[in-house]
Length: 236
Image (cartoon, rainbow, N blue to C red):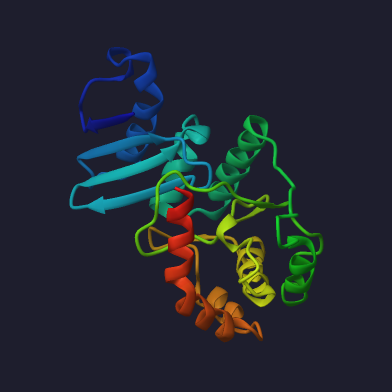
């Protein structure tokens, strides 16, 4: 659902019930920032990204997960003031509702690879993570990639690995470096800096490259990306 609110436009009573939460977010933005003449709010079902936005002269477009739509003041604080306390509240709310909707799976054993020992090895370089997070192999995608593949994902609770890597041709060090990357997301959460949500900060990248097998893993991925794409398309 998408709603654009103009400054001085109709209030919530003239909106459909389904539009009122979006109106509340847009109005909180317009009340807090006089330079905006309009605000567009898009409700999403994104399970990993809570907020994203794009500023234009006199306008803001904001994508908001449905899990946090009822907290317009915190949303405005994050977008307009980089308020880290508000961001922490929204993320906690989002993660709590995600867990209620769908329990976190822990299924690390694939057809070829077991993610558990590889994650334990990767944790040597991420001391902030003392307990292995839930690990699982993902599903084969319904939309086939063209050039790039998201090989792993961390949603703040668990780590998911693309099933194309559960293959005898994939070395253990590739999976360990991938898990190291995702563990760093748990140790170094995103921050809002200058209106942008920064996921891979300079500190994050520095620590990622510090893994002894990082360069070797990157070289392997570059050399084998065509084969990985072929196997995904064959499954599709």
